Length: 395
Figure 1 (cartoon, rainbow, N blue to C red):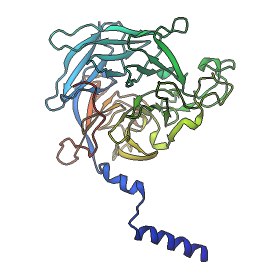
Figure 2 (figure 1 turned 180 degrees about the horizontal axis):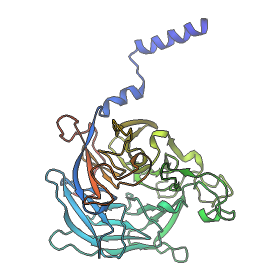
Figure 3 (figure 1 turned 90 degrees about the vertical axis):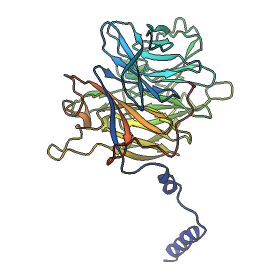
Figure 4 (figure 1 turned 30 degrees about the vertical axis):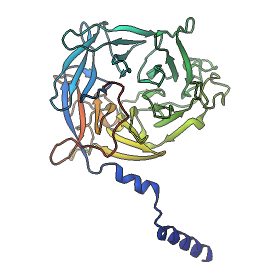
C-alpha cells in the first residue's frame, strides 16, 4: 500500500506541475474523424506519387502501350496531363521523385529514368541508372544522391546513386554503390545470405491471397537531419539509418554472420507495429512525423517519436464485413503537398482489399487506379493538416 501511495502521489505531483504525456499532446496535431475523397481516377494502374510547389501532383501509369505516361494532376482542378513517357514495352513504374533542378526521376524494373516534365511536348525519359533490380521508392539526399531499394526481390539492398547516374551492377558500380542492406526475412542464397536456397527465417503470408511477402526495402525518405527512413512492408516496420557529415554510414551492421557484412542490425528498427503491416510508401512532415500508406490494411498510419497512430482505415461493409469497398483501395504512395495529404491506390488483390472487384476501381476497369486525398467526411472538402510536409525541391 505504501508503494502505491508513493506512486499515486508522484503522479499527482506531475499533473500538478502541468506536465503531460507527450503522446497525448501529439494527438492534437493529427486529425480525427477524417475520410478520403477521390481526386481523380485513371485508366491505368498507378503507383508512386510526388508533387511540386505549384499545387500539382505527379504519378505514373503502369502497363501502358507502347509507353507508360507520367501525369501531372492539379490539386484544385484535377485532370490527367501527360508531361513525359517511359518508352519501354511492359513498363511498370513505381517510385517517382523530383531533384532540385526540377527533373523527374521514375523507378521501373531494374532502371531509373529521368526527364524534364513538359506538357506541351512530353519527352521520352532517359535512362539514369541501371542494375537496380526491382527498384521501388526514390529519395534524394542533400548532396543530390538518389537512393532506392530493391523492392519485391526481398534481398533488402539499398543503393546510393551519384548525381551523374550510372551502372549499379557489382562488376561496374560506376557512380553507384550498394550502401547497405535491410535484413531480409530469410538468410539463404536466394536472399543474399550464405545458406543454400531460401535458408531459414520466416515468411510473412498475406491472406486471403496467400502469397509470401518478402519486401523489406520499400519506401525511402530523408528527414531534415539527413537520416534515412526505410519502410519494411513485410515486418510492418520503419528502419532509421544514420550517416556522418560526409555521408558515411554510421548505423551498426554485421550483427548476424549469416547475412552480408553490410546488413543492418535489428537495433536500427525505429518502430514495428501491427498497425504498420503492409506499410508501402512513406512521407515525412516538417516535424519529422512519418506518414504511411499501410496498403494491406487499407489504412493511413503516422509514426511520431516512435509511437504509432492510425489516422484512417476503411470501415467494414455492412453486409460482407469486408473493407474492400473504399475509399482506400490498396494505398501505396503517400505524399504531403503542403498541408494536404494524398495517396495513390493500386487496387492490389490481397488482405483487406481482397477481392479487389469491389470499390471504384477494378481490374476489369474502366478505371484501374486513383489518387485519394484526406477530406472532411461531411463536406468532402480537403483537410489541411496542422503540420506541412517537408519543403519541396521544386520551386
